[in-house]
Picture (tube, rainbow, N blue to C red):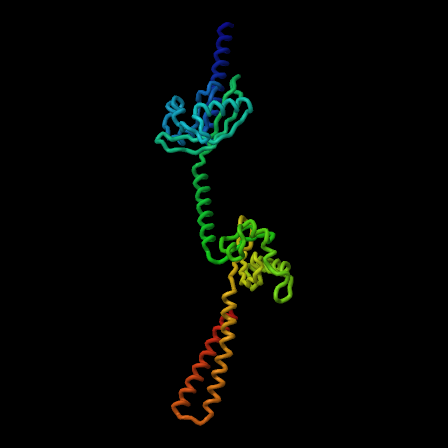
Length: 332
């Protein structure tokens, strides 16, 4: 009877041992299957386990080596200026009390490369004691991507700011959200914020065709938004109240999974002044044509008559050139 009882106890012990071994293997399998580096610390802040992802992250081939020297794989000074040991104890204590804690942390690989990370510490109950599990998220790729986006953004802003043509960016409600330096110079406004606030007051109440400025502007932006592009002339005002005729090009652009309006404004004051001068030039040239034509009907030497005819032909050629310039300007 006693031998039977002993055999039963040994069988139960063997079965229990097998269950424990299977549980441990399952726990390790779960740890190793995680894509995040995981470290396990006991209540004394001693690293007692880690997964394969941690060994790969820190470039350590052997778990025993890592567990014995895990403190070597943290940068001595952390981003907040504290020593790694002191800061680690603060984070562990906070996690022990609150149950969870997240922070920035800088690790380093065995070769010395710094690893900017986000760590999450979680307190769990295990085998009658509290332990801390640390999940490490490698932020290097994300930080590099953010830095690239910032660089591209800054580069684009520089390109827009040095563009001599006035640029204005509108949101989906057609409110001004940004502009470049050329816009501030053109309208005589001190800052982008002031420009955004004053933009719709920098037009006369009505345009030269009698249409109300604000309603017409909104209608033009809506048309550009619907059609993709719109070009038109507009009577603006500077901040000092001076007349500012411009050519406006509105373009619909994709922005953050939505659409906005980008506006380009070309100062037409010099252009219109040039056209006025061209029209003024036509009058004296036409007078020259008329006078030479009359003069050639009088009696004169053949040489003088030929000279007057050359003057008339040159004047007519000049008129054709002026008309061509005016025609091209009108087409533009």
